[in-house]
Image (cartoon, rainbow, N blue to C red; front, side, top):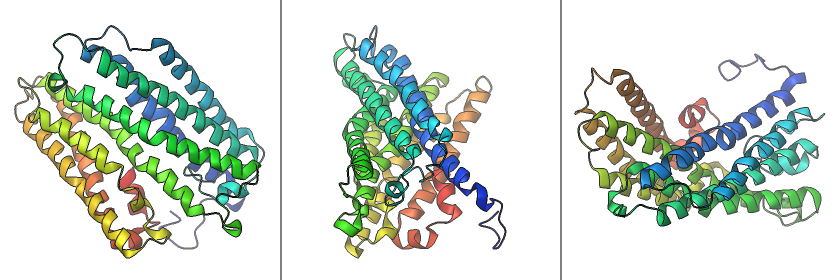
Amino acid sequence: GELGSSGDRFIAIDIVDIYNLAFTLHGVIMIFFNIMPGLFGGIGNYLLPILVGAPEVVFPRANLYSLLLQPLAFALVVSSLYCEVSGGTGWTLYPPLSTSITTLSVDLIISGLIISGIASVMSSVNFVCTFNSLKCIGMLLDRQLPTSWSIYITSVLLLVTLPVLTAALCMLLADRHYNTMLFDPTNAGDPILYQHLFWVFGHPEVYVLILPAFGIISLILACTTPKEVFGNQTMIIAMASIAIIGCLVWVHHMYTSGVEVDTRSYFTTTTILIALPTGNKIFNWICTLQSTVVNRYLGIIQIVTAFIVTFTLGGTTGVVLGNAGIDVSLHDTAYVVAHFH
């Protein structure tokens, strides 16, 4: 409403802080406490041992600790609601805003994210070791389903990128409480450094959220068609390619932060390159759908089709935003919000 017409205020001045905190918690909770535990944690814990022929994950006790840390982290993040002054910094926690708001609310969110990161690392180690060590006899790598590979690749992504986010959050805490001024531009600090550290994690996180969903869609299609998923091996290669390229494109979130022309051209090219393995997956799913028994699995096929259509729209808008020139024009518009939602 406020974006659509000038002068109208749907959010009154006296509740702006509440809106900012709600906006912050929406992003943090949906990503770190909804999709990640649900898709990655849930599918990994329940389906991965079954799919690799293992009786249990390798480290069940570490798995329990990981599970118990999540409610603690969630409680810390949600408790920021009860502070007198809100910590509405946005879910990215960019300095200097996050270092200038001295309320306890921001500290609670940062601490909750650090604990959640530790829990996710424990789960990732568990899944990687389970995939590598507990496969049943005869279950070779080339016989693994894309669903198993999706959990494995997601775990590797988290192990590579989560330490970077944890380091950035610890640096943020140090700036807030120990006068380190790592992100303070008035004392030789660099707030853009935080953006780099955050998005080195933040963009692979996109694939952490979607790769398990890719695996589930492939599994559903494999169970509802008389044949295996079309291009089964290329689906796995495509997921690995998406994960590798996804770690190399983080600056496309920062085109408006003052990026050189050469840097923009590199990140534009690599960002658009992700469309190739993604297009391969969509092509394989559509080909697999051709052999589905529609009458018997109509509801399931409708859900899968809706996922493919929605993901294609999101991916297409991502290719548009990946172009640095267009991204600068579309920055801070509803187009960006529509893309990542």
